[in-house]
Length: 211
Image 1 (cartoon, rainbow, N blue to C red):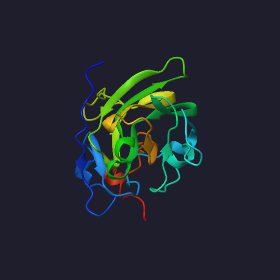
Image 2: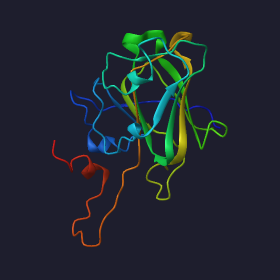
Image 3: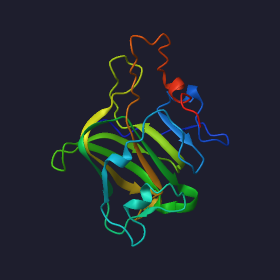
């Protein structure tokens, strides 16, 4: 695998958690709000069983999905630390959204992540390695680095099992804090023959529901 890419997040948050449409094609989307961003990719996190390599009492895997920015998973064991997400069937996984807060967590903040995927724990392979520089907010990125057929984006990864490995923390910290994590599937662009207005772009998907 080539050298780990250095994340250069695009700051698209100006008091809102909805990125501007033109920023959705950026390789890294960073929203500096504590609330999860509003994105067109479906959140498939609830379909899976979640577990972690270790945790302090009261700071387990449930804190990754509770929607509370003040709670966090706190590891309590040797490095590397990891989060395992197991689906009951093979699913298409497009992106990850992860909430990290260096100003609060300091040396507990992950600095290098490895994303692994496979059909089970015995055949996991690295699909992406990300290096972070003092992240603060929700960072969303593709888990694959392979371009799709159209060359306008990256392919989804099809897997039963996804694992996020924290290889290193800032300032060589031992334990780690992750305040939120979401697994996102690809945008489904299903357009019927009778649809006279086939609006299926990512920009349209962000505004197609009434909130």
